[in-house]
Length: 342
Image (spheres, rainbow, N blue to C red):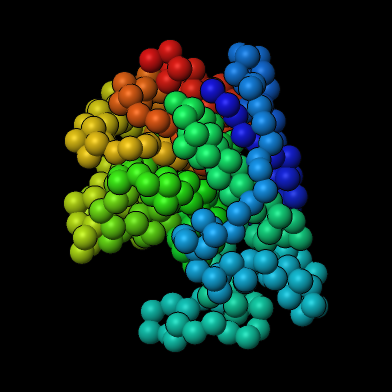
């Protein structure tokens, strides 16, 4: 399996994250990649390549042009306004407020942000573009005939809708890859999101479409970020009705329960008969993850990788979350190894 990876991810390293009322070292940080790379090398799954140049057209098919322009210029506008810290907005267009883009960069950031834990830094634009190019390059490998590929993306993407950032995400890498499969001629694409947190951005992007099936296994939104999407009754709208499937699960969920949800999800995917599968691969379902509450063991990641393999579909793995950094490499590579041996 080819692994696509860019060192440009290091350019995005916020020095603070708002968590529990404190400014802490971000859970989503560059060292996550080092543990994954180390484990890939130790198991000889390091057939690595850098991404090709980013092509903006596929990205523009998913993301709003005004939002893209905001991300590109946010840091320069922020510093030009005299702010000395990182871009963390202070106001948001909440209920009964006007949904208009302000001129002031603080207001503009609040318009485009869906949460305050995700700061923009001097290198965020370059890192986000590199992450999207990793997904694009891995998609092209599969479009060219490879049975599978791993897009080792950072920053992650599945929380980003077409016109917002948050949850550590800026561009929705999985959605961009799925759209590229469609643009290449695929009639149907499935996205399986196994990250602990609901892929609200991906759901929002494809909610009214029937050419992309979105299936997500995640913590109940009553109790887990992103809180405001991910309920079981969210099934799509218009042409997309029935093509959005959520499996919200409670705190303490073990693999015995999670695995049954995965089995149901895989049956839904098989029935849909897609031409390609994109897996939003978050490993924050691990029992020791600091910002999640499922109880999967490391060996469980091998098992579910093998189950995904039995779908017998061209499969693109796109890296999302996972914040128990000392175990992130083991769990991520267990999924890939389970898939390759499945």
